[in-house]
Length: 438
Image (tube, rainbow, N blue to C red; front, side, top):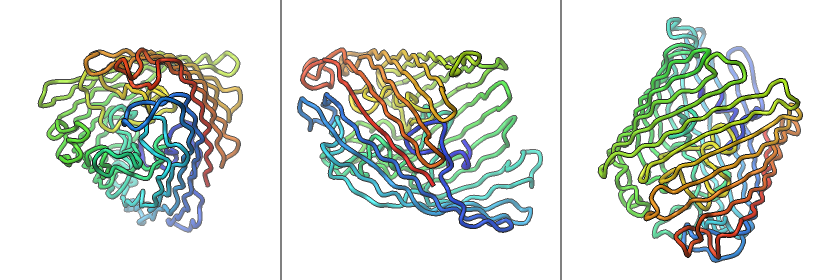
């Protein structure tokens, strides 16, 4: 994903993202924007989960939000490419009971730098590589590979939970208020068609990710029929203290290789996608993969799109920095399951069926069903089923409203080896997300 598309993406999700910058100055080759993104969520879960060991049976109600604000801009260099950059802060917090898994407690507040990067794009200096065929950037920024199956920024935001060390990143756990990697250096070669590639170094300052350092090589072929990609990810270092608490010791020196494809194959209204990942760890080889197909019934009212996806994650697969790339359900599968109850893209196979429709250009209605099955019960059984019903209403260019209701039923309660406290009855989950963008 290009930097311009990333600038359009709101932090937690949805595909039809609005422009999130207000132009302050545009003269000649100089552009300066004011960036403002404010997102708020009110959430209630009728069941709690034993993920952190600090919740009891019952319900939780909480609110979370963040404001991202700062400046971004670009400066043309008279035919020698363009400099670009951004500097943004994020203020975040969680209020109320804290989330249903106890990752946040309702006391979290933080203001810190989010984006702070500079880059250069080549413009038409290298015609053989296409427009902006060379793109060099560094600093604190979001990095995305493919559709986020492995790398989609650094989005996990823990709160005041006591795990024997301070993992507090400022709360707003569900909204993923902070997503930028702390340190990055990226070289991107190639345009929008044909062969292109990326060489990336990044380091996380997220203690939940054991402050992992990665080297990434990515090669893609882009055509009208679709995109094929091959990615190699080498884990260079982790903070051993946090890795031992989180069980990520094997991430150090781990190699991950991914082969993926996405496209229509030239068939209108069709979208196919697949990815296979193999992982070399000290304890042995792990893998994950998925197959997905979508069809849009363009001639029917509201142009509904139906999707089926099967995904499988081996028993000790490390999902790295996966994220919310194409809307609800990717790659946080299930609002309850992905955030509170598990499984968390490891030791599971998942059947997913989705249906969405657009009654109006600014309104999307959707339904998502997930069937989770555990591969190795000895590691705990986090199987279950979830149905989520949602709406995405872009009221105008600056206001988004997205209500959601979910129904989640685990195969086992916490007392039986699962995570849901107080039994395995159906959890009714409600949330309302409101976002403003200028």
